[in-house]
Amino acid sequence: MEITEVRIKLMDEPGERLKAFCSITFDDCFVVRDLKIIEGANGPFVAMPSRKLTARCPNCRTKNHLRAQYCNQCGIRLKEQPIERDEEGRAKLYADIAHPINSQCREMIQARVIAAYEEEKARAKLPGYVSTYEDFDEERTAEAAEPLPKKTPHRKAHSEREQPRGPHKPPEDVTQKERSEPPETAAP
Ligand SMILES: [Zn+2]
Image (cartoon, rainbow, N blue to C red; front, side, top):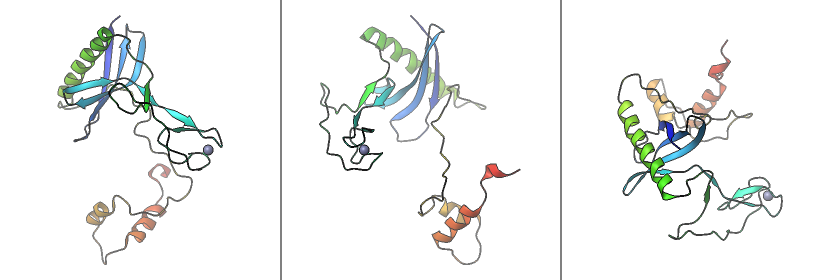
């Protein structure tokens, strides 16, 4: 078995340990997505795709993640869950969805992915660089069906700098104005 393709999406967030997402293709016929490249103490390593472990709510049976303090569905307060720990004492909050079952395979994946990661970082410096990783939902933001709760908008400082005008306006007015503008996609 051989890895025939590696696709990488660099995260480019300074200071973050998560450096990239990637997908790998085995023998031109089977793809595994959502592997992560993480910066560790001894250099970058590959983390297998994983899911959050959950426990069901005793009231409504909805699954909540193990450290949830309240049920996501019915809102009752939940007791702290006993959490399993691995051999090194780390809390087991995730389970791998796909993973190698021996160290030979783990090392083969690790070597191939890290080599591709280094190549991708070099390619990313060239003009016209585009990642080949297919991004399905990582960057999506849902649209609200009602006005968002009031809070200081993130872009306040920025937009005030761009449009200096008259007296200073309190944040509430800025929020109201931004809300009353039609969304960009509504233009004919
Ligand atoms: Zn519940």
